[in-house]
Image 1 (cartoon, rainbow, N blue to C red):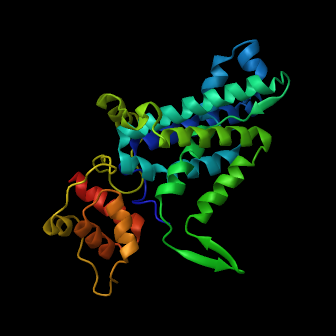
Image 2 (tube, rainbow, N blue to C red; image 1 turned 180 degrees about the horizontal axis):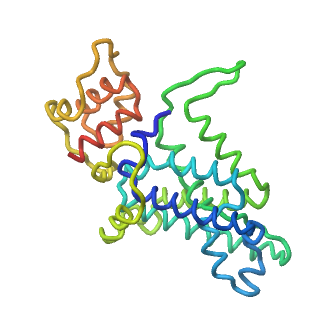
Length: 292
């Protein structure tokens, strides 16, 4: 499954978050302090350790967890491209704080002063992202391996399963809290999906983070959930090459999927022809055409 253009094109907030998470994890790994991470009842309700609360948002507790976690964060950059960096920043803050609140409540209910019940890392953001991934990202390819059905989304689910079971109960709890946070965002509690930060906050990440190693940077995309104007044929042709002659006619289901996201039907069809009926690639074609 294609997550769009390679690198961090139109995803500066994701880039900054991944860099911060990697640096904090490496820092604690070099110092051999992985065991000092993780939240317990005593850390919150005994002697408050504020640094642990902060680190629990960024630093993973092992290298394998970091590898799977950063891969998933990198893949989910597609959502920043869809809703824009500003609203994605709101999604990050809401997911992190809400999942952290659920974790604290869980620690209060379990009341085990000795055990570290919550493994550190951005589990809240990662598993909150699985809610729109499940509901909004369509399946474009299906295969069977030894009679078992798989889709192009299966690997993302398997990577999440590996991450959420990496420390068993310690990682299962923050994973569940993240899914709850993502569900609340989806339900638009407190009209959170309409909230925006001042523009200078999200633009700060473009200057803060390192240059992208993938495709050239492009302008930030805007929210596709609302009404999106149609794009003339000549504009689509100017930004993207004409489809090859053996391109197939896009399926009605694919066109309907893009139209339900707010795109004009004619523009959706043209993008699908150019993308060879790949809905994810066509989505990025339309988003980039919108930004010009």
